[in-house]
Amino acid sequence: MAYRYLVVIPAYNEETTIEQVVKLAKRHADVCIVNDASTDATSPIIESIAGVHCIHHQKNTHIAGAILDGMRYALQNNYDFCVTMDAGMSHDPEALPEFKKHSGADVVIGSRSKRVRVPLYRKALSFAGTVAINIALRRNSPVGRRPIIRDATSGYRMYSRRAYTLLLQSQMKSRSFDFHLEALGLPFREGLKIEEVPITYVYSNSSLSWKVVRQCLRTWARLLSERPVRTSAIGIREDTTAA
Image (tube, rainbow, N blue to C red; front, side, top):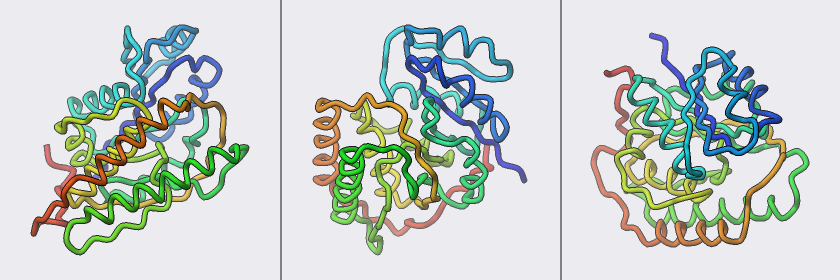
């Protein structure tokens, strides 16, 4: 049975790349663009692209709000998998078929095995973030699970319906880039299956600030302090084809 995939693309002032990203992604899956209160020409550009669903925010909600709204649309329309992707061509839409090969997993992370034009400080932050999240997950591992996530901060991901429903039903506290940490910690603690696929990441722009870094540190500290889940159901995955 064929699965249904939805690509969710948060967009804030992405007039130079949004059309290219969407048209490439459409080759492989349905697309939902969340226009997060852009002030440039992003809105009219996405409205001119046929065959995509557009959500327009009047106020900027950042990464967490935009992705969760896209996931709500996926749930309402019975999609089996939801893929989150950057609007700036940092994530190659042509890698989507590789994600689809992992339909047996609940979270599939696009692990940045090749990085193009990435500043050294960004590489260092990504490395530190991955080490930190692995420490937090190991400390709170369900019985018998010891994670080794190669790229915990990558935002190019595929979530099963079970995984994105979990995020929608949880009281998530993240507001910006720290969403990617929390959105990994919650499925892991519930015993969901996590896999990675190698991708090429091309650095384009960044809204990273020290405020964002502090938010990530707070989220990491919260994940570190959470108590592990102990359940006999770990490893049992819900059939994503269910209505």
